[in-house]
Image (cartoon, rainbow, N blue to C red; front, side, top):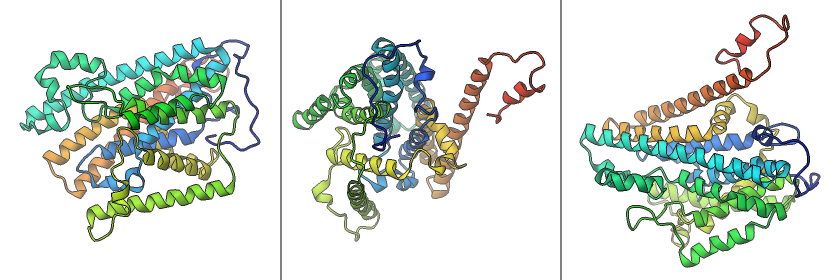
Length: 422
């Protein structure tokens, strides 16, 4: 669970458990009862939909995404859940087989993320270059920040390989790569005490606001949009929550007064942010506390963004338990499928949002076109996720031992292998 009751406080010893080695598939089991916490997949899938919609500048449907109702947006959801699930997966691996195995698995995942980012960079750049040439519109070069690649590709490609060159929309995967690369240190600290990494992480976050630490990018004068020195704090908070689950430790108050206070603060933040959204459309409506609270720096994860998101996560986790029937509804299943294949669907969403941007800019930007582009993109994301789930089921069935001669009904295995049977 994201936040456990006080009845589940049995601590797992920090020493490595004895017994046979486990696989990553074993480590990914999210709970002792073998059930996966579908909330993580659901909200990660929902964040992927929000990212797709928000990345289409002309799409007025982005008023339905998280950023309309709060100071945070899908980026916070993505990073928090990434930290949480990393602690679940690799924390269990470390407790069972030791830090060496878990570190090796972490860096294997880092390599997968890096390859995915470079592949996405190549396709993204090719897509933009083709559109620029096809419609003779060099505006896209500056808007999407690929002009430097086209001007000096021999330099830009090296900078891309070093994660310094980050065109528009291609900035969150490099952040995740860096955060996961340093995660073994977080796990080692959590092995001593679940809260130990929070201290150094907070100090680094505070120094960003005080001294302005940042990571240089390309071309000269640019910095990483998502400052790893700041966003690591949210990642570590998520990892702390995840590790607390596998260690059966309660680290947040569970009382009704604390929850009621969180709900009131969340409601106040929502009212303030909605007033800003309405003010942008209809000027006579006042934007509450705009002068006092704006700007809220996203690159350095402004404290108000962080606080509002953490309150939101706490309230949602209390209102929607892992056993919620909503998570097993027909509407939730496609969202969960996307969340379970988050890397592939994220890369696809970036390319689809870019395509949607081109369609609405070069073809027609009216509301009907926006609805068609949004619905079509989400349908492609869901269809791809379902296809990936089917292939995964094929792999699982192929690894199963063959039944004994005469056992079972003829054609049973074949029916399992048919699309839609999983």
